[in-house]
Image (cartoon, rainbow, N blue to C red; front, side, top):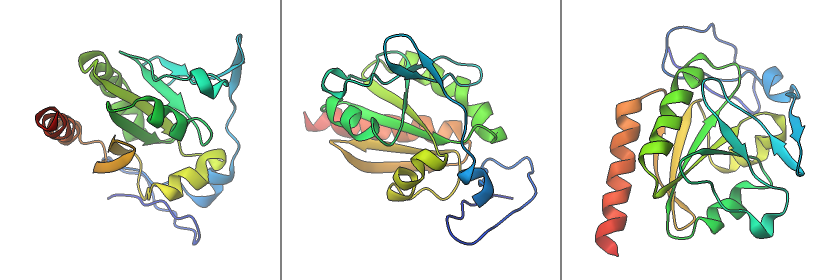
Length: 178
């Protein structure tokens, strides 16, 4: 059973061993705690993996290589732009989603394997609700693959093999066009 995100009408379904989750409207409105680390950056770390935070100075922001960069509504598009012609893979998740937690260490592993790809993650909480809606998220986890600032592929649910295939497909298309 896949659970869907409902930004307007409430939709609450019981969790199962599905490959995706849907946040209820009440969980989207809940403010999730974040920590400030030294140096003026907003810090966050995911289960089973390390994430780096995007700096508040967007002029110098560059997606990290070999790591997953935690983004928010203010840092996402500047970091996509800073990635230039690199492929960007965005993990759209929630902190309470079981399949998201399963995919987090695998996503980190991909960031360490594909050093020519920028890996980012977006917590689809209240603060990032507008961006999640703009990107058309309906279930979590959803992985959006961008090239030149445009979404070119998407994988919904905790489908690791599909994600790897999608990354390889976009990379091979990008490599053959250069």
